[in-house]
Length: 620
Image 1: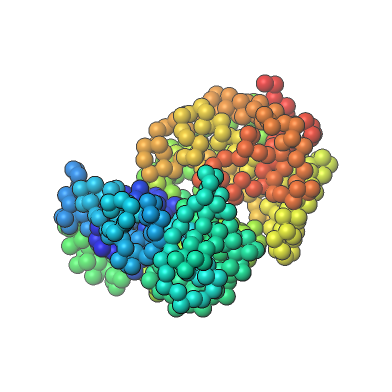
Image 2: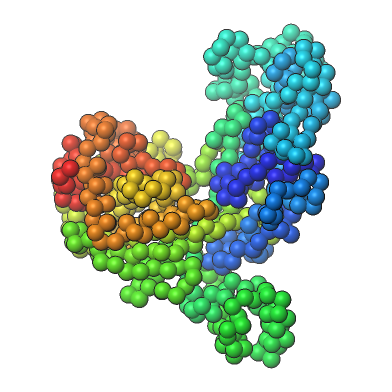
């Protein structure tokens, strides 16, 4: 990473630039805090294009047709350490120091970076030791200054320095006194943290939060420090947030699994290099364009095919795009094409990024599971399309009004950051006849009413209309609960960390149909943790039967029972039934719905509900 002054200050993994520290996010380094700048500041010469037309089309529908590429973050390819002051040392993701207020921990002086009180001390040989020092401290010799830990943000995605002068003077003031920030007592609670001016005005930080904070803070100035602009009018109430708080940045992402194209291997090659081939006007011009590209190595794999075959593949791709309307070209329903490929009678076996193999379901659970696929090779592509502050974007998925998505660049972006991860997985397709029989039970219908009441209460508390909308249905609750049980069991058996195992639930959007009912559990990590082979080996019939046995046995009794089993969604107005951190909840990186719509009682009998479970009781 490199700030605006072109000083290298640290390193991040490429995946972190999508999920944790993307554009507009704050990175708390050992001695300084920085904000990742917008796409206008990025240098893309060292960024590698990531081909995935299905995802690119979906991004274009959200951000506009001008988005031409998905690019990986810029990286430095070198066998040894990076030499300071070299060109390689200048490659990275641009950041800038933020917040712009620093505090001396010795004399408690609080001031802006550009006030002349602080001096940047870069360390090109140890970027992690880059720091600001208080040059004129009267109590110590050049102590290391630390960033002020309070910021101001609003629901519209704006971020600003905390209004220290306004806050301590309780409004606008001409006072130009020096500020100090200090604590009394040892608890470091907000009521023990004070800011004071030399004019003897002082105020506790506890008054910056809650209802009092809304009256104590000024109007939002509409600032986007990652873009360097502050010209927007904002009518949202600004809120005080802590540096490093999780609500200061929530990513808005899209992800798809790479699927085999209709044209086989050549169709995939054409799709990946479509940006080079789409403007070729005719068959006669094809050799004139292709030969230089083949010689320069820009079209690896094309040398195996004749020009006639390549032109036919290009024409087929062009007809496919022409026959699809702008609204229907790339649907947001990413899962339907995946479901069709996963449940195909003859799944593809020669695609380099999607290799699956059919196996028999475990004999003990053959009445429940219709089919099993071992995904020996998977590729997932993720793209960052924006972010939110203060509130997560999940509210929109539940049918409410999501917080506004903050922009990645000043103008309409021409590209968006993306990454690709490879892994393996297990796909389970459940028997529709067994599901229909389960849904017809009176006990299941009664349980559904309880969960719907909790769903209505949750939406009513957030003023989401209509309150009964967007309940995913009992089939989804069942599949989601089974997926979480298996994720926890896989983490114990195969050696993967639980956070590296993810889920994709395939269920009908109507909530009552059983024709689409399956789960895909897969690893998708940028390192070797995603391709160790341990997950696929557990999908073989004998191993899978043992795995399901153990998962159901553990689900019968939770260590938090009877409280967990007796949890009533209707009374608590929650989106889950018998579920807690001891039995069903998993890492946020694993769950596609934020640990919502889970109920252990739909899978196995519990203390409270003995006749709702989909599976027969399992003896521990």
